[in-house]
Image (tube, rainbow, N blue to C red; front, side):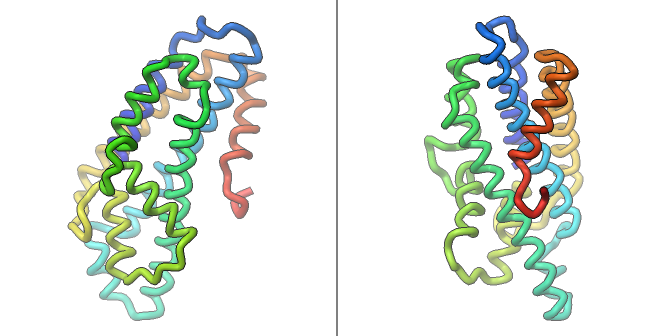
Length: 215
């Protein structure tokens, strides 16, 4: 997930670098608001994803099996709650990219490029699109997942196959690269508006991208 998200961040950042194409102040404000919303969704994906993987460790299924049943149940509930939020975020990210036209205004080819990364056209279950859809539907369908299936979703989010050991060193490297790209993304956004505008738009975007229990 992290390497795919980095590719998306880099594409959007390169597209918004040239803000001279904005025709009106209102158009500029709407586009900047959209890319700030995207920034916060990506930022939350990174933070919760990294926290979950750190908690799960390199061998999450063995970790769960080693716990007493009560502790294992409580831990899995926390993990599943995080996975559901990640699913909503990935679906939200797709919505920002495919259902809104602010990115197409900047670069008409951007949606097509990002769709290849997400795997939207191929609809593969191991694509970012497939992962997002799978996690998202955990919120909608009353499926009784086994402990192994729940852990399997953690490993898939981390970029591994079902129940494979997690390469924490590789994941740390991917997260660091993604964080660096997101910092550069934020720097580009800051050039598009004044400090006062940035504060107002950032506060609005942050409110709109928080979950109800986080507000």
